[in-house]
Image (tube, rainbow over all chains, first blue to last red):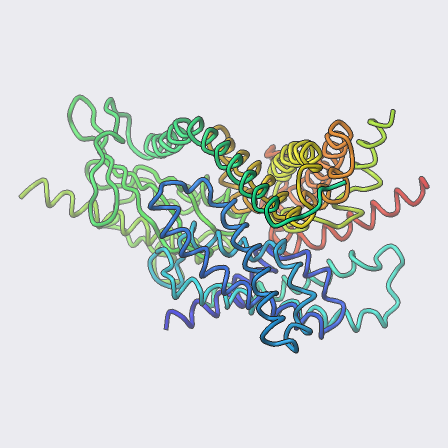
Length: 199
Length: 188
Length: 195
C-alpha cells in the first residue's frame, strides 16, 4: 500500500519537475519532439534508479559509519558521473540498439539536477506518505526514485506534445522559443496542483 | 592547452584532486562544526523560549525523551511553570517539526514551527501566524475540540491550507498526549 | 577595460538567466521572495568565481580525458564549503534554500563557464567572467524574486506594505514559470532596442 502512495505522490502530487523544479534544463532543452522526450525519460529513469541505489548504500555504509557526511555532495556527484559513464559503456557492449536510442542523452544526465536532487532528498529528508514522518528504507528509496523519474517522464512527454502543436501556431515574436514554453509549463504546473491533497 | 591523457596521469590527477578537495573540506568542516551546532541549539532554544512562560532554567539542558518526542521543562525558582514539547506532524509536503508549549495546567501557551516542507510562501504564514490564526493559544486540549471546523471542531483552518492546519492540530494533539503522560508519571 | 567588459558581458550579453537560459532549477525553485533569490544568486556567485579561478589555474595540469570529472570535483568542493558556511552562519537562509545549495554542483552555469571560459583564459580574466556571470545571475534571481514576492505576498524584501494575502499562485510553482517567461520577453525587448 505504501508503495502505491509513494508512486502516486511522486508522479502526480509532488511532481519533481512541476512542483519541485528539478530537471528544468532538460525539460526545456529536449522537449521539442515527443520521441526525444520519451528517450530522455527512459534514460533518466534508468540512471536515477541505479544512482539512488548506489548513493543510498554509499551514505549508510560508508559516509555515516566513517562520520564524513560532509563529503556527501562530492562523493554523490562522482558516483553519479561514474555510473553514467559505466552505463554508457555497458549499454554499448550489450545492447547497441538501446544505446542508439538512449546514448545521446546519457552524457546530459550527469548535470541533470533531478538525479543528484533525488539522491540527496532520499537520504536527507523525512517523508510522510500518509503515515508518520520517517526516513525511507532502501526499497522505498528506489521506488521513490523510479516514480520521480516517471513523473519527470510524464511531464516532459506531455509538454513535448504541446510544444509540437505550438510550432504550428503564430506566436508573438518576443515570446518565441523559451518564454512561450515557460508559460505552457506554468499552466501545466497549475493543472498538476489539482492533484494536491489526494494522498 | 590541456595535457595528453595517459592512463597513469589520469589516475594520478584525479586522485590528487579528490585528495586535496577532501582535505580542504575536512578543514572547513572542523572549523564550522562548532558554529553549526551552536546555530542548531540556538534555533531550538529560540523555539522553546517562544512557547513557554518566563523561566530561569535552561530547558534544553533538562530535556527528557518521551514517547519519541522531546520534552523541555521550563522552571521558575525550581517550580515547573510549563513544558515545551517537540513533535513531528505529517504535513502536506512532508514532516512539520514543531514545538508546542503548555502551561503547567495543560493550557496551550504558544506554539512555534521549527521546520516544514509546506508550500513556500504559505510557509512563512505557518511559522509566524498559525498559532494566532488558529486561535489555539490559551485553550485546553481536554476541554476544547481542537480540530478544524470541517472535521466538526472549533478551529477555523487557514484559508487554502486546511491540510496544513489539520496536520498542525494533530501535532498539538500529539504533544498534549505526551503532556498527559508526563503528568501521570509525576503523580504516581 | 577588457576586464570591465567581461563583467558587463556576463550581466547583459551573456546573462545566464535571460539570454543563455541556464541554471533554471534554482532560478525557479528559490525565488519565492527577493531575499531568497538574492541569497541563492550570491551563493552561486561565490562558487562561480572560486571555481573559475581554480580551474583556470589548474587547467593546464589536467589531462584532457578526465577534465570534466576533475572540474566537477573542484566545483563540488566549493559548493560544500558554501553549504557548511551557510549552515554555520546563516542557518535561516540555509534552511529556505535547502536542497538547491548542494545542487549548485549541477548548475549548468558553473560547469559551463569552466568549460567555455575558465580553462582557456587567465586567472584574472576568469575571475572577472565568474563575477560578471554570477552578478547577472544574482540580479536576475533578485528581480524574479522581487516580482513574485510583490504579486504573491504583497511585500518587498520581507517588508509588507499591502494588506492581505496576495495572489498565492505567484509564490507557487505556476507563478515561477510565468513570471520568468514575461521577464525574458521584457529583457529581449529592452536589449533589442539598445542594439
